[in-house]
Every structure is written in C-alpha cells, then in structure tokens.
Image 1 (cartoon, rainbow, N blue to C red):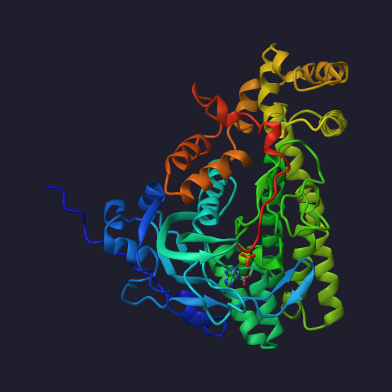
Image 2 (cartoon, rainbow, N blue to C red):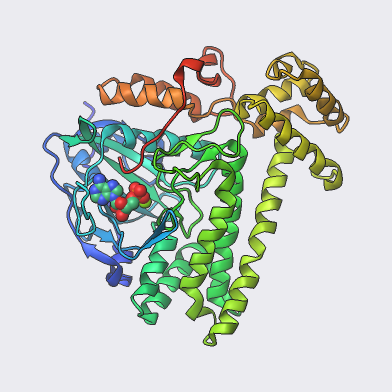
Length: 487
Ligand code: AMP
Ligand code: MG
C-alpha cells in the first residue's frame, strides 16, 4: 500500500523577526473547498517537499495558508511604490501573505508566499482575492521564464478555493503559492525611507545584503555596493527580457525586486510582431511600460532606489547624490553589454568578432524586422536554418526579400554558428493566444490545455514533432491582444 507521508513544512520567520516594522501578522482566509489545480513537482522536490503529501487535503491546506506550521508567522508585507510614475506611500500586500522562509535541498533560503489569500489591512478597496485565470497565467509564464534561464519568482501550486470572485462576472477563485529568493522590492526601501527611521532603513539594507548580495558587506561603502549589485542584476534581467520579447506590463517600483528576479506576472505578454511600441496592458494608455521603454524604466526605478538609500551612502547629502549619480551612470553600459552579448549569441556570432562589425548589422536588422513587423521568436529560430544553408523559411517572413537577402549575405559571411543559435533562440514561448486558451479552459475546469502548454514552454529550445502549433504566432482573427491588471 502506498501511504503518502504527512506533509511537513518547516518555515523560518526571519523577515518578520528582523523587520517587524515592515509587517502585519495576518492569517489567510479559509477556503471553503480547496482543490489542487496544478502542482510544481520538480520545484517541490528542489525545496525538499514531498509532492505526494502536498496533494493530500492537509497538504492543500498548507499550500494556501489554512494550516500554519508550528513556528511560522504569516505576515502581510508593507511597501510603497511609484505606480505609473505617481508615488503611493502605502501599498503593501493587499491580497498576499509571506508565510515564511524555507531552506531548500540546495541550502538556499526562499520565501513561501501566497497570492489571493484574502483581504489584509493593505487591501484598500480590493477584495483580497484572485481568480483562477490570472494565477494560472503567473504559473505558466513564470515557469516559461525559468526554463529560458531568466531569473524569476516561481509558482509551487495553484489551488482553487471553491469561492467565487467578482470580476466582470463571477469567476472561480484561487490561491497561488509563490516561491521567491525574497519579496524585497524597490518599494520596500521607499517605504522604510518614508518612515524617516534611518535605523529601519539600515536594517533593511543589511537584511538585503545578507540575503542577496553578501559581497557588498566587504566593500568600502557597503550600501553603495548594494545599490550597484541591484543595478547590475536588473541590467542583465531587463536585457534578458528584451532578448526574448517579454513585456512585463507594470514595472512599478513595487514590482521591481532587489534580488533581480522577475516578479508579479499581471498584464505581461510576449511580443509577437517586432515593434518597440508594443503594449498589451489595458491600463497603460501612455505606453509607459511598452516593450522598448523597459530599459529606461528600469533605470528610472533604480534612481528611485538610490533616492531611498541616499542617507546610507554618505552623511553629506550633496556627496551622497554625487555617488548615486556616478553609480546610476553604470546602468546603460551594463545593460548595453548584456543585451549586445545576448544578441550576438542569438545571431550565432562569435564574441571574438569586433563590435564595429556586429553592431551596425544588429541595428540594420532591428530596422528591417520593425519595418515588416516580423514575429520576433519565429524570426530568430528560423534564421538558424539559414545559417545551415536553408533560407526559405526565414525569407518567407519578409515582403521585401531583397532587403533581407542583402542583410543575410553579410551576416552569413561572419560564419554564424547554427547550434549556438538554437541554444539561444527558443522555439516555444507562451504565445498569447495559447495562454488565453489554456486559462479559459482551466477556468472552466479543464486543465489539459495548460498541461500541454507547460510541456512545450518548459523545454523551450527543444523542437519536438507534434508541437508545431505551439511554435506559430496567432491567426489574424485573434485580433489585437489586451491584458488586464489587478485581476
Ligand atoms: P499588483 O498590480 O498586483 O502589483 O498590485 C498592486 C497593489 O494592489 C498591491 O498593493 C496589491 O496588494 C494590491 N492589490 C491588487 N489586487 C488586489 C485585490 N484584489 N485586493 C486587494 N489588494 C489588491
Ligand atoms: Mg505587485
């Protein structure tokens, strides 16, 4: 007989203990009828948790915070944030809780966090809940990002609550169990700074250094080194987003982590037709968070982090500002280097080639694919066939074939490595029409389309027969795609 082990979860309360001013102890709302929708078995194992026991009724209650392990102190975290450029001093976890920290099988400390677990004192006018669809979106897009080796928070499970949530109509509710190397955000520092308590700000910075950037502790100016470490992590992160065509959609300062992980998959989507002005979010009317703006917005957010940290850089304010500006100036170079190196790999070009040669070629390509709104993902993946001497499929993506041929001739003369290209250009990304189809089916209780989509996007580079439909862009009748926030 196969008897599942009793589920066990040992959680630390380090954040709640070290930074009580940034927490409100709170409990998750009780779910009337918890049903497991999706469990991330490999992540569970990485965390040292037994997947079979998490599937039991007791395991589900653990996953949604309805059973709190001994020693854990679930808290709602306080943070501020610039939302679309305007400062909100008190945001915080309105519908989320930090259950505590877990030490994984690899010895690393991670947060176990809930989303959709009920109203907290930070809920304002929100209902504290989440619908099944958006939680499944966070699950599938986050796992796709992870498989693309892009730093990200991950999803351990989505559990249906058995409670309806009122959105445009009534929708089934769910709780997402999220795993992150922490939930420290730029907005956490903005909150600490706004309290005027410099001791709190310093303790928060020390906590962040210990947890994410321990090398900063050895630097001459540890807090400036922390800032530069966050800047470096964000520069490479956003470069990786740009290379795969990811549009986050709501890069408010409360949605930018100190760890350098992607967080909060709300109105996010992958760009299909190449266009820097691409926006999917229904509320981003000015295009502030458009695809092409993301690096500039990351830099803007980092300037807000520097402002929050300023008193820790140096007592003299003028000197502190000078130090911050000097550090912030490094962002563009670091972002540019990460992006250029990634683009060279996507084009199969050796990093020994002179940038004077590769850079104009990349610029010309950008103009070409933008002019013809070529599908970003399909272009790079089919280009590797051209590197192997079969240019038909990639040529078929262009109307002005002569312009492409002229570019391709110069590119091929540089000896592109097709295998390098296939390791750097995914064939399967979470295509918007497929995500919508999987979410609609999942909301109606059919999780098979989600399972199949996960199967494709969690091995993004590995072309497999039968998955052709997962590699293609949406049909014209899919129309202009829009995503929605606050869902
Ligand atoms: P987000 O756009 O998901 O990053 O959330 C921005 C802020 O709104 C955070 O403070 C969230 O906790 C809060 N929030 C979003 N949705 C809800 C909801 N349904 N109920 C309560 N608070 C919410
Ligand atoms: Mg958020």
